[in-house]
Image (spheres, rainbow, N blue to C red):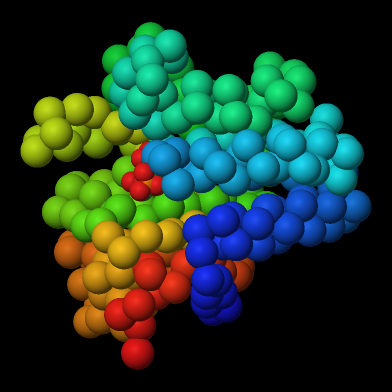
Length: 239
Ligand code: 6PG
């Protein structure tokens, strides 16, 4: 499991952008398409902006299909909607066709939004298992990833699917790919930076196996590679 540590968040993001483009180029060459799942939150915004600003001609972006590892159950025009952040940072600047973007339909009820998303993925991939070429993931201070939060029922889900999950402490619903679905990815890349993540990074990578407390430990593709892109502060507790 490559753990790449960089001097700053900017250097970390630059390295992940290079990795993204390299992975995309290989997928397009081998299979004619690059199916990537984007992560939400604040960390990846600069990555998406960098890809749009510096790599607009590096690959054939018309061959890229975008999915989301998770989505907040809010209207599509809500500032917390992950697909809206990606649209502003990446899709609009690169003039990505709407047909290449698979966003969660939060006009449906949470369970229907999750099952509709899974149906859309299945229709796109046509064959099973659904194998994303790359799943980008972040890491929360509490060691969650996607919307796989500590002590939530979705952690026990054995199906490679998409589920809704109610977060009682935040009183919100989330829609998330399950760990088995993420684990079907050919590659997974965590982007994690900042001192607030140091304890979670150490627990996930070096701590006792405890997926209820550290859900990101669930990410372990059967036939895929997990890479970490960390800055020194997020890696500061790693021995
Ligand atoms: C989301 C993400 C989530 C995120 C972590 C880290 O929808 O919020 O998918 O898993 O990656 O919460 O978020 P930050 O990058 O904002 O620290």
